[in-house]
Length: 427
Image 1 (cartoon, one colour):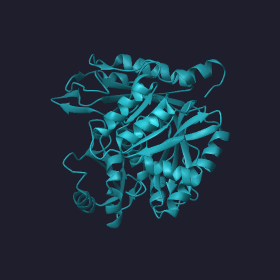
Image 2 (image 1 turned 180 degrees about the vertical axis):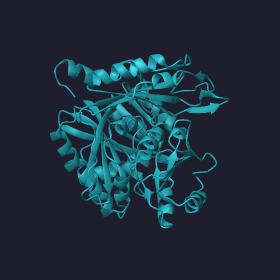
Image 3 (image 1 turned 90 degrees about the horizontal axis):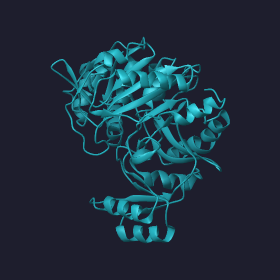
């Protein structure tokens, strides 16, 4: 079977690694791809993924039997709708179902209607009512852009002045809509479920590190590192999440005539009152995919095909439960603000010398035999280990082998899990 993977980030490199291992995969195309995905198949930077007719024609011309959409923007733009209408098996939610990620307000309204535990919230389409609400509620408080914002449209404001600045900045954009919600306390975790429109099966957990600097300081980013599994998500918590968050979400989407097929990625806050939904993503996470895919012990392709066909009955995705994975994101100086592109990266092959280490590429480009930085988040240095502590040590040892003076990373990825292991929790 020929497979087309849509995207160019670290998530897509991790998915290319997993898809290319399948005995069902004859040929893997990635559009546009990056130097990392090229190691597992053929990049097609000439294929304009925003041109759905061009993507459809490419699939028909090349006998593509499965399309896997990695990033959120093509999902929200309706790529799955157009390809499915042409008879192409396409993994991911429709445009309508992708509103779970594309609109924070849509998801919040769904939560309110179906009793899904989440933070108290209010939606606004104008500046002054939002400011009035802020002055009434006070801080700490969370301010979110309603739409897609590449993981950076969220401000956790400690003071009213910080929140007001965030609100004003968001409403400086024409047509802006925002959500203001209570600031929940607890530990965050990422929970993934594979869905076929009716059923959902849990397929793993991770814990992301959103803030740019050590100790969870600085602005939010798309993610500076992650580890899997998130051992704080116990089997009992998993059952609660499936019963009280995932299941009613699928029920609500069916009732709206927009059944959800694809990956439902629930960002959770584990509060004293139990797990609550922070927000949904409607695809594999980034950098979460970079710790899920190395632990995957099953063939990914049949499971994705079953989801496309609307029947996950009997599907089991097994993960290596003996080993943990941890990834450290190396970002270009200045991230998540303005970054300088074009610096040379050396030592990736040396970092990957161990079979337990993977360097997934994101913002990179190849030029004249050199690997160059070409984005904000550039590399995801991932390692497996018999514990999070061991995976962490291997990942940072691999980071040390990469020669890239213009890059930086957090030095505390996985610190909570390691602390639990030291205290006797294990993985």
